[in-house]
Length: 270
Ligand SMILES: NC(=O)c1ccc[n+]([C@@H]2O[C@H](COP(=O)([O-])OP(=O)(O)OC[C@H]3O[C@@H](n4cnc5c(N)ncnc54)[C@H](OP(=O)(O)O)[C@@H]3O)[C@@H](O)[C@H]2O)c1
Image 1 (cartoon, rainbow, N blue to C red):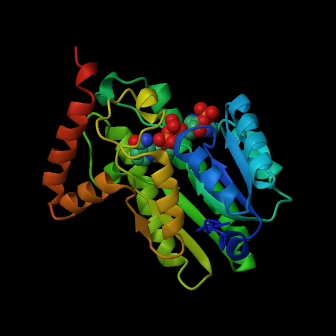
Image 2: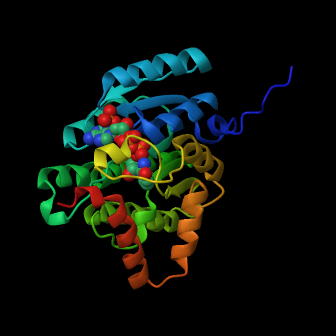
């Protein structure tokens, strides 16, 4: 019988037996977990919604005969991040996917500040702590990989999603710097910068997406690029948008992305 070759079966050998995916309960993170489990890696699943994590763990363990420890953690809190570090202490982890994150839309002065601070904690502070903790371990072993979720919004200011874009600019800049620092160390770092993706993200962030990539495409194209490229814009739309933006001066990019976000948030205007 013809068996389809698993494109990612080299991952356990290259990085070790365990991967950790934050934000694995839905969307892009869930697809990363599926692809990594399919590759033969055990996958630690992290998010807040325990019912969804448990259901995913059961399904992946049955389908791929791997282990999926579940960690319920709110990454907007220091305790939540600490819980992840403690509960993974004895695992041979070699691949970290910092995927958990959310956005917000509307004029910055009208949005709820507590939500914005939580977003900063999840999108930036938790990422910083997790990368610092796990990459130090990877460095001691001389191998390991980190995947960071940036966005097409990360490379310029974006009106009506100004703070979300700023959190992704943080992730993008952190990733670029670390790539340079880690040259020759055996550590891989991939920046994933999608355009719109059809997940729970739009509803949470109150954006109305038009054409969008699927989360499956994002996870697959990211894992294909890991260890080969520094950055990937998964899906046709993100590739076109990044190409178009790359030729424009920053001031023009700010205008273009402001107009795009304006159309995605028009329903929020009084
Ligand atoms: N979708 C897009 O258009 C798009 C575009 C560019 C970049 N991205 C980035 O891609 C990443 C994944 O987004 P997605 O599209 O897959 O969104 P999603 O479907 O809304 O999933 C977000 C995931 O993050 C988790 N999460 C959110 N807040 C959390 C918290 N406080 N603690 C722990 N986990 C938390 C959620 O789990 P729980 O709710 O169970 O905690 C969920 O599993 C994000 O970093 C996002 O910024 C998305």
